[in-house]
Image (tube, rainbow, N blue to C red; front, side):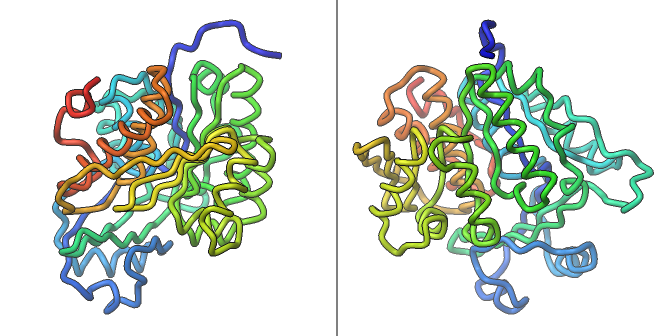
Length: 335
């Protein structure tokens, strides 16, 4: 049954609630630690502690991919809420203060202090090399407790768009939460967007992701970079992957780094150029692009204009350290 009430939110983001720890490192540091540059690696508390002892952080912020998107969307004028799991600890309190100070509603209840698994608030150690590349090391902690009960119906059903983060997809409980969020959104006549987040994440859960997007069953808008979309459809042919994606979802938004992006909808392909900028730190580039694109949809802009706004937001974010915009995005985007 469809909802008849007008949305009171533009965007509800659902993702891993993580405190981002950003640290510049020398070229070759990731390899010296046995890491694949540009990748995201899940780590335990011990490994996070070792890496933390080798770096000099320059920034601590509330993060996680979709949380970053939520902040950018809010800066572009959208009304935004975020659902994610933190622990009842100081890092969790920091996350809540930080994201609420950014103008984002955060109604999620924290994990109880007596959690039998002793999970703490998640953190991501982001290693940034001089060329702007970033290698992420993530302790998920309390994020792994996110389940269907954390998908608040009144929030999802009051948002024009619900935006799901692929990084959250690892635990089975979170996968069930995604399906619940999609069902709730569709019952209310709203739209669902999904970010694939990471090619390794896609590789771990390819069948489950395919089931979620197949034939528009649960996702209307799919965000992916080139590596992610090729992995999802197990092909080396970008156009073939784009064609399969546009058959599965209403809109596939496919980013290609400096080559810009392609918006695939049906047989139509809209090419969007990357906005020129000086690359300092690519952390949050895809998050900002998705936020700009969704903010454009909220404003009723044509797809090409949505892509342009996404490119502008992305270029601003990668021009400095951290995933939070430092300039007036609405002014930059001409909104």
